[in-house]
Length: 447
View 1 (cartoon, rainbow, N blue to C red):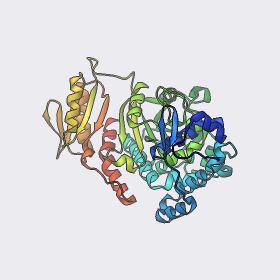
View 2 (view 1 turned 135 degrees about the horizontal axis):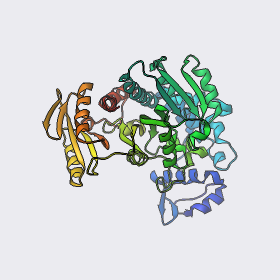
View 3 (view 1 turned 90 degrees about the vertical axis):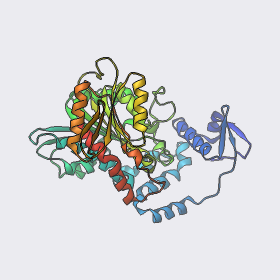
View 4 (view 1 turned 30 degrees about the vertical axis):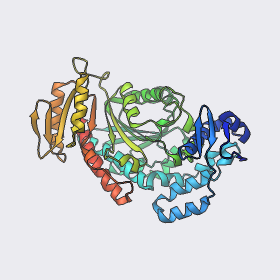
């Protein structure tokens, strides 16, 4: 690209943009690339200027990619997309290459589909989404119909995990995406499922104006899509409008910055579409804490994030399944205005410490410890068997009798089960069950 900066030399962002010929639509990506170089020590940022600290090492990316594919064949799609996009980065930044054609060449969804369905992380996270939904449905009478809406379903990666576990006689499933290409491809892919229908939907626009009725869907699914919208609170208000009162929202979102994603999907304008800078100052992804806060601010309650095993989030590339329930009316609190929390308390004392802090500011906390059976051991403390759904239901019923509505649930049990920095795909699957099993039982008890 004509990058000629040498160690100790400095430059300003606008000057580098002009010198290198970066097109306006790629300015945010270029700034992110400078941030990455700063994170790894190539650059240093100070007082609106970047200073070069060291030169870039000479590498052979194609050989490195092939070596990684040989070592990790299950990640072939990820590595293929990364090589395809990163190798054309210069042309994309200058506007000479359409990045859409790199991710979906001539409308071909093959590699993207493999990424969303067959990568190790996709298998684990899509299974958590599926289990969250099927465990909630299990409690319903078989005679009760259920309507599910998937927003931004794309290649159908998450859809493919959900559909085989649904009762055709009980289910109506609406597959939506903003692009007609995706809905058309999905009709061929899922033609064996007679209970599914297809519509285009732009969740940033009032759904009623697109033919969707309000409060008609029991479960709404959105996998890796809501972050690619302009104003998150407006997007979530449209989602809430579609969801039935007391219905369940299941999100799958990346919740930490990922460099490889920046080098693939960061090339697309949609990645940088956000302009709610008070919530997202310079990056499209929200953290787990931000998701919990913004969901509660948009009329959702009982927000649960999975998996919750300590160290698991990094292992799973920072992906998170977020389950929230739409409130029956406006977000309820206890009679005196304080909030009610259910804390699944660990043996290390983290849960107790959190409860003391919340109590000190007037919040109401109930501690639940893992034990052999349901037992109330103090006015606001219980033990339950983590593998017994009835114990979960009993403690929820008891807590609900004291407080009109739970404001939130904190899962501390799994802080006792840390994981190492490297795990194989088999261990990852086992850890995901450990991290999510009790949380899924809790979700089932709540709905």
